[in-house]
Length: 213
Ligand code: SF4
Image (cartoon, rainbow, N blue to C red; front, side, top):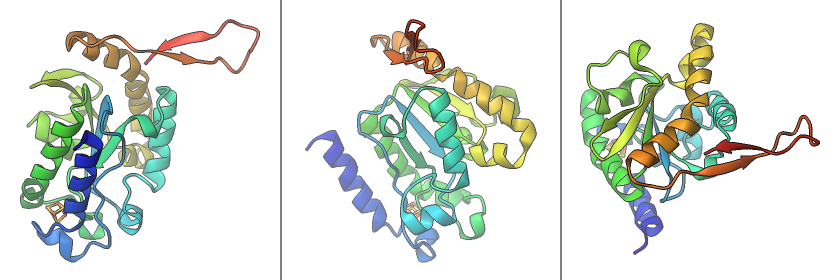
C-alpha cells in the first residue's frame, strides 16, 4: 500500500471513529487534507462550523486567511498537509478537552508517521502544547526547534489573528520566515535545499526573482 493509500485508509477510519464523545455531535469528521509527501504539516485545534459541514479543514474565514498567509510564503494548499489536533468539532467551538485530545492522538500520530514532514507548524496554543508543553505562545511563536525527528514551529492560530488585530503583524512575519526555515530544517535533516521560482509580476522586465522554498 502506498503512503497515499494508507493516509486515505486512515481518513476512512477517522470518519467512523467513536473513540470520544465528539462523534455524537459531529456532522462530518475532518481528517485533514494534503499530500502524503507534504514537507510541511499544519496542525490546528479543532474543526469549526464550516469544517463540520464540509469535512475539510480551514474552510471558513480563518481558512481564507490561512490561504493568504500561505501565498505570502509562496506555498499552495496542495503542497502542505493541514489538519487539527481533534478531528471532530467540539460543540460551540469550545476548546477540545484533554481526554478528547488524548483519544484522537493516535490518529494524529499515525498521520505524522505516514507523512513524515520536515516541519510541523502548530496553529494555536493547544496543538503547540502537544510538542512544546508549558511554552507560552507569545514568547515562542515563529521560533523553530527540533522535536524528535523533525522541526516544530509554533504560530498563532489564524482565527486569533483575525479577532485580535494586534497579532496580525506577528503571524504575517512568522509565515514570511517559513521558506527559509524549511530549507534550514531540510539541511539539518540531510535533505536537499528547495529552490522555488517566483515571478515578480509587478515588473516583467526585471529578471525573475528566485525565492527559496
Ligand atoms: Fe474519534 Fe478523534 Fe473524532 Fe474523537 S475527535 S470521535 S477520537 S476522530
